Image 1 (cartoon, one colour):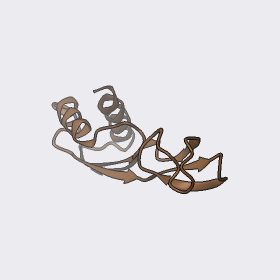
Image 2 (image 1 turned 30 degrees about the horizontal axis):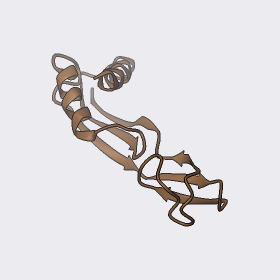
Image 3 (image 1 turned 30 degrees about the vertical axis):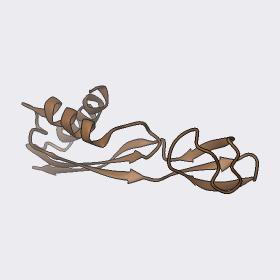
Image 4 (image 1 turned 45 degrees about the horizontal axis):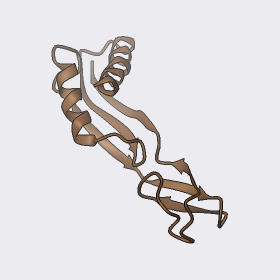
Length: 111
């Protein structure tokens, strides 16, 4: 719920700055390793936007794939989940380098 509220704060600030009458679409990038459940975020976003400039706005989620640096084989490898073994060498020394982020990428407004 707090993630949805944080997104709404950004959306409302943008709407005020741009003198928008309403928001149609919010596009959010979420890393696969960010531990965010997309369906839960959609549900919470719909709940927190009721009665706001973003009421009824669509929430589009773009998934960012995970990747990490393997200390054992010194390679960047894809990561499907945190604490996974390196797909190249099997070592458990992966440091995530991508896929942990969450950011609002786009807000479509109506003036």
